[in-house]
Image (tube, rainbow, N blue to C red):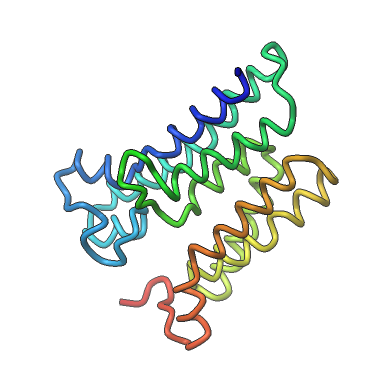
Length: 199
């Protein structure tokens, strides 16, 4: 019962879409209704409100980190095992993708995945962040950076920690990140994806 509670609470925490919450606080339009329609920091930035975009990025990342970190803090005294922690990591990410509080219309999950990776272990988070930064530096395409990071995250986990239940969660998160970026993949293949800094 305790294990199920951790998983459900993680999903509910992930369902808090900070793009929607922040937009309401700043009196901005619903992020589902303009730009890409994606409730994420990049779309919120299209309003020109950098503070709202930054808060969106921070909130979406922190919820991923907090959900798993709280579960890990309570894991030993509550008798929670590693497979349950892996389920918690996946649940908070699924909550962001399909949030019950926002009509199951969620974002692509990059910030939340980053928060989860840092909660799993700071080394994994730093490895993912370094991959993203290197790709962005050389290619200046945000979606490409996210896609390559998703591909490398399971590899970094395996190299750092070996075969553990959490590896399956990281692999599923990576697969879902690729799935949510399928439109970006199409534009990349056609050479139509915009570069960071281009108007």
